[in-house]
Length: 83
Image 1 (tube, rainbow, N blue to C red):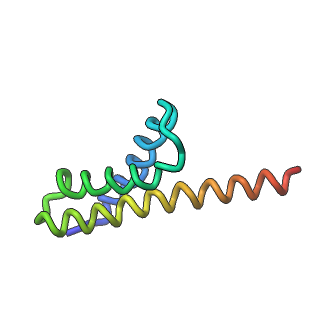
Image 2 (tube, rainbow, N blue to C red):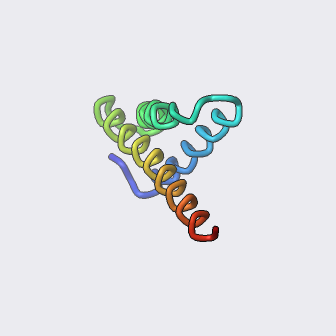
């Protein structure tokens, strides 16, 4: 099952998505790529049955995309306040 140290996968997913974006991927595909990477990590990295790996992967991918959008919104709000 999912353990607390597996949460370190979330920043890893964020980093890989950021690399894809810098290579030219449109930002609108970031959540989808995060979800796919999360599922792949869930299936291949975690030693869990397939269904459980997919479910944990979905949670990881959605967490990564939520962390990204939350950080982006916070940064945009701060920039608005600075102006």
